[in-house]
Structures are given as structure tokens and as C-alpha cells.
Amino acid sequence: MQTLQMTSESVFQHHLKALANNDLNELIKDYTEESEVWTPERAIVGLKDISSFFSYAFTLFPKDKTKLEIKKMIAKDNKVYIVWIADSPIVNVPFATDSFEIKEGKILWQSTAFQMVQK
Image (cartoon, rainbow, N blue to C red; front, side, top):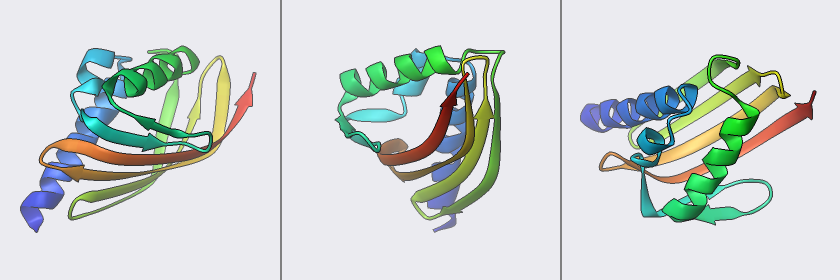
């Protein structure tokens, strides 16, 4: 079980680094064609749609101009849960949460919910 947790946390840390760098090529390596990202609006499935989702997110949270803070993180076996806040020149996110299911080094399922305020 400890190996699974380290692997899940490692994938998650890679995901965070790619997000912070607005590096879509690195970020998409964490997903598969069967991966799903559930948002309040819809379920996003597959690499093409997940790539589009994060491409748009990068316009809201530009590299070197966004402050992201993980307020809480729980990692157990193949699951990671975070509560986070963020601020950029475009939006403020005073509360957000994401959950991840990670297997064999890939994010198979992610859910996200957030409160976002346009500036």
C-alpha cells in the first residue's frame, strides 16, 4: 500500500508542476484516452477534451502570475484529495476542491469544484 501512495503522490506532484508551468505537454502525460475530469458543468473524457480544458485553464491562471496554495491534501492508496485557493490577474478562486483516482501512474478520474470570481 505504501508504494501505491508514493506513486499517486508522485503523479499528483507532477500534475501540480505541469499546472504551475502551464506545460500542457507534460500535464497531458498524466492522463489516458479513458481518463475523465468531472466539473460542475460536465464530464470531460479523453485526451483531446482534457487538453482543451487545461488549455483554457491556463488562460485564466497564467504562468508566473498566479498564486496557488494547497490548503489541505489527503493521499491514501490510489486517491488524492485537495482543497486549494488561487489568485491570478484574471480570476480569484477563494475555495476549490479536487479529487483524483490514480492507477499505474495515470490520473483515471478527477473531479473539481470551485468558486471563481472574475476580476
